[in-house]
Length: 219
Image (cartoon, rainbow, N blue to C red):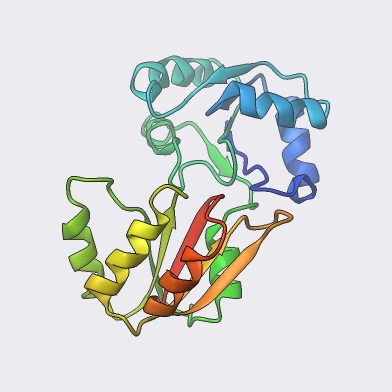
């Protein structure tokens, strides 16, 4: 079986007992960055060997790991933080497992998306998850498509492009859309900035832009 195991996005206390036990029991852990995950495994005294599995090698390594699964090995897939396959590597391996009838199980656990929606104060009964916008090619096309939606929109963004993104929201989605920007979820400097898109642009210019961001845009 392939286990998809979410890992903390900040506070290590968010790691579940079941996640720890599965990572101890499987034959191999597939990690996005073995150096980052090595610190997590050491903290929880998990000695299971790791192999790298990330966006730059998933095409070449998927078949190898499918062979291990077909041979009777249980593997766990983790990312640097959060739930694998959600704006992280993993989809290709999961799809390949289903194609050869290998069982897949995903543990519930940490993700930035749901806490951000819940604390945003913006309607979340219906929402569209965009994830990361393309950096260059296709970015404007995606923004124009988002502008046509009539539901709440959720995006991920890095600290390097957060200012650019919010200015694009003002331009393409309008200056008066309700926006909540949440960063460092579950960490000591967790922060939420709310207001119209114009107000949030102004507020963020005065704030520390370090950390990973979730941007919630109201309908």
